[in-house]
Image 1 (cartoon, one colour):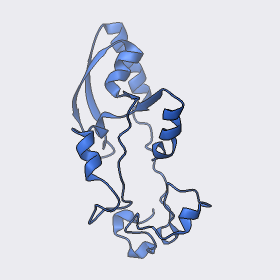
Image 2 (cartoon, helix red, strand yellow):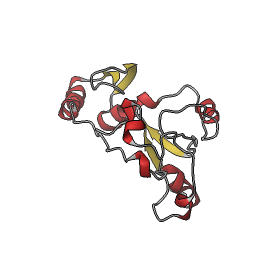
Image 3 (tube, helix red, strand yellow):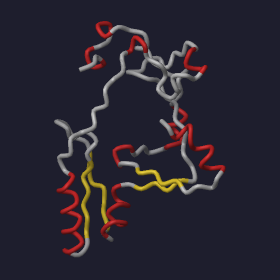
Image 4 (tube, helix red, strand yellow):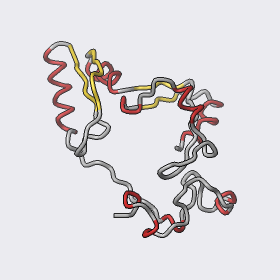
Amino acid sequence: GTIGWSFGILSARGSHLIVPVGLEKLVPSVRDAARSCGQDTFYYCQGIKIGMIPVMNARVVTELDAFRILFDLEAVHVGGGGSSDSEGAVVVVASGDRERLDRAIALIESIKGEIALRPAKSLCTNCLPTILPANDEAARREVDSCMYRGKAEDELPPFMRGA
C-alpha cells in the first residue's frame, strides 16, 4: 500500500505514525508473514502479487485499544469472521461500568450496517501497477506483478470480472 512510499520520509522526520489495524488482520508472526511474501516468491496468486514491509516505530491501534481510548473500557477479542457481509467481523466482549458501556453501544449501533466500500476494479487489459503514478517511467516497463494483467474480462475467472 501507500505506506511503502511514505514510511521513509515519516521515519526521517521523526513523525509519530498511528496505524489503525483491525483484529481481522492479526497474524501470529509478522516476521514469518513478511518472509513468506514477495512478488517473485509466488507460484500462484489470485490478483496482484505482494510483498510485505513490517512497519516499525508505529503505534498500532486495534478495536481493543479503541474501547480503552474512547470509552475507558477493557475489551477482549473472542471471535471473528463470518459470511453474508460479515467477512472481517470481530467479536469483542467489553467490560466496565454501565454508562461507559452504553456510550460504546450507542456508537457501535450508529455505525453497524454501514455500506461496505466496494472499490471499482480497473480493467485488466490496461492495468498499471497500482503503486506507481501513471506518468512514472517505471510504469512503462513490463512488470509481472499480477497474473491477470493484460487479460480481457472474458479471460478472467468469474470472481475477478467487473460487476
